[in-house]
Amino acid sequence: MALTKVIGSGVEGVSNSSDATAITIDSSENVAIGVTSKNSSNNGSLTIGHTGMTKISASASGNADELVLIGANASANVGMSIIANNANQCNIFLGDEDDTDIGGITYDHSDNSMRFTTGGSDRGRIDSAGSFLQGCTATPSTSVAGNMLRNVLAVGASIFSVGNYSSEVEMIQFVNSNGNVGSIDTNGSGTIYSTSSDYRLKENVVTDWDATSRLKQLKPSRFNFKADKDTTLDGFLAHEVSSVVPEAVTGTKDQVDKDGEINPQGVDQSKLVPLLVKTIQELEARIAVLEAK
Image 1: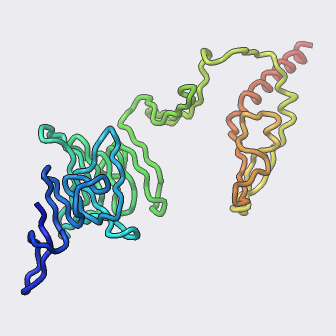
Image 2 (image 1 turned 30 degrees about the vertical axis):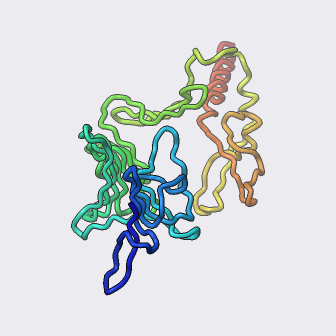
Image 3 (image 1 turned 180 degrees about the vertical axis):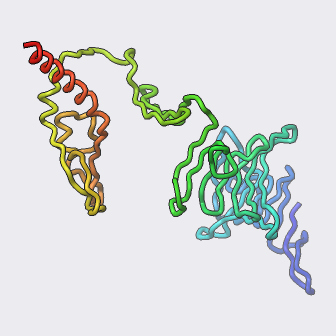
């Protein structure tokens, strides 16, 4: 059955006359609006658009052809608007007829937030300032657990990660193809930054090595960063540390990016601690020898 557009006698609508087809219903009860048939380029239960556009093929694992929107021509943008009045919400709900644990997306005009739901509960939202909240519906605090990436233009911390725990708990875990290589943990009063150091991960362990000679190769300096001329700091130049404690340095000396901008080296000064501890032990041993004479 084909319904075709008619214009005349002050009436504009659809009919089964011989004019250009506006709405088509095929034998499988698929409906096409603005196209003449359900075919490989515009199939689906409801297809709205233009026959000249080619629809993206659905993946083998999931067919998304029940509603297809196709641009009016090759240069047209395609979109769908859901409009509510100023006091209401716009919703897209996802689920099945036997599942009450609905998922979906909601725009709430009352606070201009975009909400994401699974299992019938609010799991994440983007608030009116552009901040993303996960596992909470308000800014995390001592009484509100959850995570938040706050708009960088906002005042205060940009990243929140809050858990309602008084004992030690792992907040962030770093993993690569070799397994867990570090974490950030919190306890009742502090934060622990750790890198993997389990003895079961190591081999060729030696304790008899000369730390003092290596330590004397380091060149502690005082300086200011060009971006902060009024602040004087104590530290190191990364490339000078790399030959003494290479694991403390990231990046390559004088490296630039594809635009010719500086790709700066960095120093993890905590990696210098073993060298400092071993040097102190060596000095203590020398002092003990001198005192025994």
